[in-house]
Length: 444
Image (cartoon, helix red, strand yellow):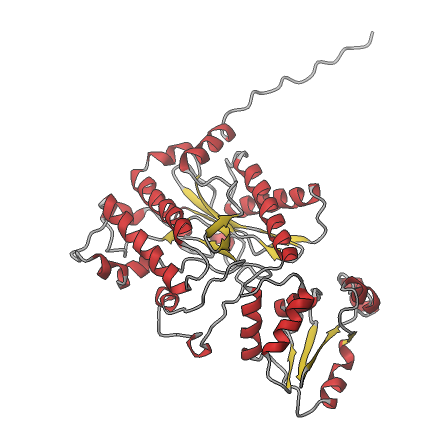
């Protein structure tokens, strides 16, 4: 896959891949922005649509943007004028009010195909996998701000905090870090996940979601929690997960430490294996092999199956390691995979693990991916011996830039070694000396 320098080159290359007389409108769901439209145009406005059409040897892109009425502008941020939007992309494509789009579509009736054409979006996904230099700078900025927020959070005492308040605290530190570095386009990449104790068995647990008042737990001594968070800078995401003992005494739990180190070593080994040219299925198989090897060395398995290969492809292991190795990341936290064979994109009868094993997407040089092994034992995890089943979910995740020789982590500064994490926590939990109130002199 060629690494293009800017959006203009991407648009030209994409048009070459389309057959003659191919006409589409990329149209988002109502009130939302479309990541493919942003990728091709550089404009991120809710409701913006992009017409893409190829006639013979020429191709055109036309952007349609909804304009804010005076009433709408009083309720939410107004959309910039069309002239300002066109200037922001250096007039690389014409921009019109979305109100003229129906007439535009009618004029090209019989040629234009609306909606979400799978073939075109799959082709765009192929280009989105490899980042331009401008995209890479945004990705590195998002990783830096995410690191600063995690670093500040690790140094704070969490006594008395709930899962929701800890998520809010991370977001506050993220916002302050972005303000310090003077980034204008800043937001969280997704709803921050903080899952304490047994809540960590839920991969996307939302402490502020439906019914959270009934389950939003206080961070307690003896528990650990999973925090999954990331910044989005200039439209590009970071995604980091750490599993952290709430307080120092958690390290006395031998079962937790054993599974934590298996997950950590699995990620480390995967960073030595993953490189450009591998398929998503090959990476998934490598992760499961590392899990089995680690669990066997620890003596944590309670199974009569002696074959290592049988364990790797067993249903029992897929219920313990319930998700895949990771995902592409960029404009979306979960950027789309490119499928050489679109018919294999959906496999509803297969578990997540086996869908990944069958994924033939080749990881190209210049892609950003996450590597996020995780184990989620519970009392039904009969593959494990009894003591390990009550540990709860453990996951570690970082963002990696893929090269022909391997992969380089952009989030390496955020600690994941248990001993280093506990040094942070010991310092954070030290009792700070109480300051005596300042004495004031009485006037005579």
